[in-house]
Length: 293
Image (tube, rainbow, N blue to C red; front, side, top):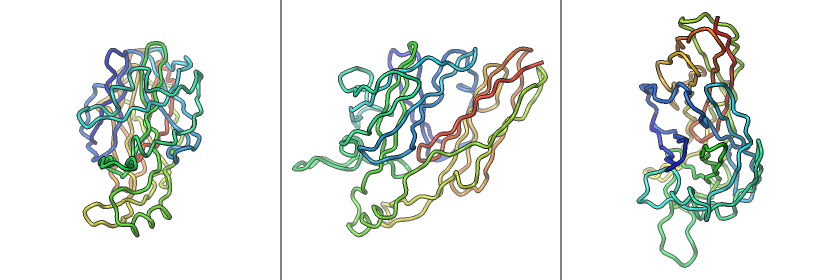
């Protein structure tokens, strides 16, 4: 699975987010939480039109377990220039392009009215600017920034925009039929006590309906097609070892669960986090406190 990295220069946290072509051969660079880290920024709903309200919260982990510090939130209004390789503009690291949303465990904000202009396919009237390219699922995203105890991270709130560079009849059909993404859900997974220095299976499962079908404009065929969301599960633990960062299910795969093997650490309390992402940016999470005997 390709990964677009959000690099925060000078920050103490780097938050990676992406979904595209899936690859299960992911390494273990991120799986063990050995310092405070933002694992996910979740918006509810997962996708909305400009001017619609969205509520955000973050999953923050540390070697000692969940971090409950209330983050400070803001939308970033800086579009990413084509010359920048980050998932958000370097302008989002400063203060000039921010729209404050307050401080708290959650933040509710109205998506900026010009989101499809700054980050989507719309172009300013009277200009010859080229519209922005969508991601691999046809989506566009409004950056939302959070800071907490020296951590800096970004979420990408998917915004529903009209089709750009499509025939009028196709764009009209898309506008009438497209259904916005919703966050997936994880089936409950219980893991209370495990033996030390042993192999334990971690499992993540979701309802079949969580991998939603969605309308996509094929720019080659110049036609609408129906696709199914790919799914990606990221695994995190405060100790022991995990063979991979993540496990992926492609859009043509009907599987509704993935598993990995956790080699447990020494006796004590360990924490496990499971983060499920769908291809259109929806997120579900699960946190487990595990007693290692």
